[in-house]
Structures are given as C-alpha cells and as structure tokens.
Length: 333
Image (cartoon, rainbow, N blue to C red):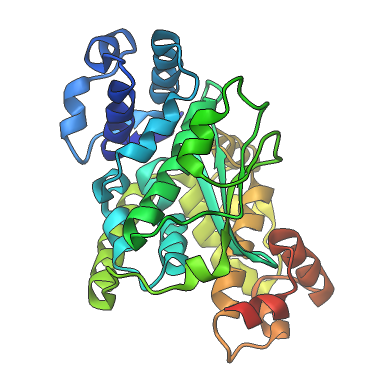
C-alpha cells in the first residue's frame, strides 16, 4: 500500500516552526520513527502519518494548540520545493496560486488545493487528508498561515483576505489567529480556505519573470511526472483524459486499459485517497478550466470534450465546482 508523503523542504519548515515554539524536534524524531538528518536532503520524503504524529506530540510538549501558526514566521521559497520559485516568477498571485495548485503534490500529498474565482474575488480552498491517522488541525492551520505569509512576502504588502475559513470549534484563545491572519475569521466552516480580494490577486508581482517562470514550470513538471508515474491515480487520470472526448469513461474500461480488475482499481485509488468518481470529477474540473481559457472553443465543444452527453449536465457540474456559469467564468479570466 502506497503511503502519502511530504517533501523534506516542507517538513523542515514545520520543524523550524515547532522549534521556534520551544519543541526539541531533534530528540522527538527518533521516538516517532523519523530521521532528523533527512531534513538536509532536498529529495527526501517523510511519511504523512509521521508528520501527523509530529504535530500531535508538538502540541502535547508545547501546550500550545496554535503552534502551527508559527509557519507564518518561517517564510522562504524553498519550503515549497521548486514550486516556491515558480510562484515568485509568476506575473500575479492569481497565476502563482494556480501554479501552486498544479504542483501541490510535490510539496505534500496529504493536501488538496483548488483555486477558483468567486463573485467577489478568488478563493484558495484547502483539504488535508490523513493516511492511516486522521490529519492534525495544526497542519491545515499552518498551511493557510504559510500560504498567506508567502503572498504577503512576495508582494511586499499586508494582504488582508476578505475572510479566513477554518474548520472546527473556535479555540479558547483566538488572539494568535487574529495576529497572524489580520482578517475576519470564520470557525466551524465547511472547509479550510482563504477568500481574497480580486485586486490583490491580479496586481503584478515585483518578482515576475516570464522566462524564469517557464523554466521553473519545466523543472516542476518533470519532477511531478517522475514522482507520479508510480501512482495509479496518475495513470488512471491519463486514461480518463484520453477517453473523455468519446463520452463519460466507464470504470471497467479504465481498469481494463490499466490491466487490472475494477475491484483492484477501486482499492488502489482508495489507498491513494480518492475514488474513481472523485477522480473523474476532479479531472473534468481541471480540464474545464484549461478549455475555457481557450477562446476558440465554444461552450458546447467544451461540454463534449469533457464527456458530457448533455450540455445541461456540464453547466450543472460547473456551477457545483465554481458557483459560476461557464460563461461567467470565461468572462472573469
């Protein structure tokens, strides 16, 4: 069974944040079955559950449930692996966060990101998945705090989101959250997310460099391809992309193409944190964004390229994904 993993770059950021909070990670790594020396190897990966146990132990030792927010103080591009440099060379935060979503799995496989326009601006949505252990709340809070701090660092501006969405009950002490986010907080939200003003996302980045962005895209793309080849999710996604223009792909056809039974396909996808239906939906959602960015494609053509026999099903799915119609989305971009 394949384990979800986290890059050593991101793990090092977490360790620095915890050590800043008074936790001696060097001494607790061995008890958690983790090798502290691997933090120096940029290609090393740590098991997702090992990182979850690290968060849990850090909260116990520090007595600080908000310790994840320290991630906002350790901002450096390398924490995002090659992706951090691709973000910096983007023309705007909007373009940068779209890159972050595309290459997210290089940083950590336990997180799923999406970035979408909303009626008022843009939203970065985060979902954290555990492997065998349920994910730590601190992991999600750290990811949001870091993403926002990185946006502020790149722009040199105190970007204040419209709203910070946090799952779970409000903590006993809300002050650390107010200090880090400096924006309205909404606890007990349906998901983790940052709601941004449109102007903040669309203003030019001082570090923008189109030729460097292209270079980093190539590095990140090659890294992701090497990293993904062994994953059934990646292989099944490729088959789905190929079959979609002929209509909605059936699970049995995808399984046959991959030379496995339907049951094996479903089990392997489950081990990697998804299902066939979820993968089909996610693939369509990603492709819809790419197709709508091409002005020469009509909405009807986009609908058929995504394997929808009836365009009204495409419109319904699109509204579910983005809370916008395809025409409204196209007008935005």
